[in-house]
Length: 182
Image (cartoon, rainbow, N blue to C red; front, side):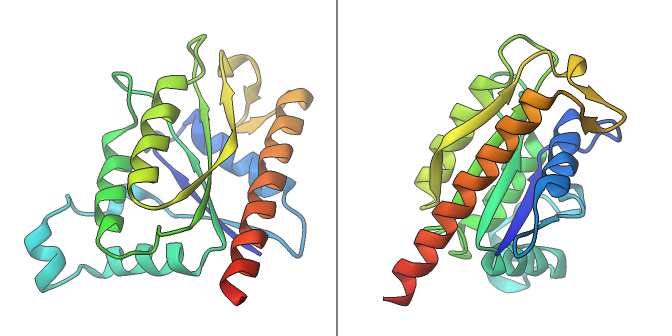
C-alpha cells in the first residue's frame, strides 16, 4: 500500500514537514509513505498551459497522486485557510481526475492553540468538491513547537494519534481498492 505525503509548507523548519517525516517513521511494510519532494517546484496554475503543454513536474505530481492508494496532507494555516503552495497544487490536480475517490487524511501542526483547524476545514471542503474521500479522523497539533523537536514529533501521545490516522487512511485505501476490484 502506497501513501503519498504532501506538505503545504516550503519552510526548511516546517512543523508540517515534521509531521510527514514522523509519519514515514511510523509506517511499516507492506505500507510505504513517500513524501512529495516539494510543491514549490510547481508553476502557478494556468488553465491554458494545462490544456496545451502540461509541465513535466505537474505530470509527475499527477502520476504520483494517481499511483498512490491514499494521500496524507499536512497543511499549515494561513489567513484561516491552507497555504498558497498547496492550493496551487490542488488546482493542477482538479483537471486530471486523480483525486476522484482518493482516500485522503488531513493533518496540521501549528504553534497556535487551534492546531490549524480552519485550514483542515477549508481543505476538507475543497477536496470533497474535487471528488476525494476525506476520512473522518484528522489530526490537529496545537502548540506544535512543544511536541516537535529536531524535525520530528517527540510526544508519544501525538505519535500514537498520527499512527491511528495512518491506520484509518490505510483502511479507507483498502476499502477503495476492494470496491474498485468489484
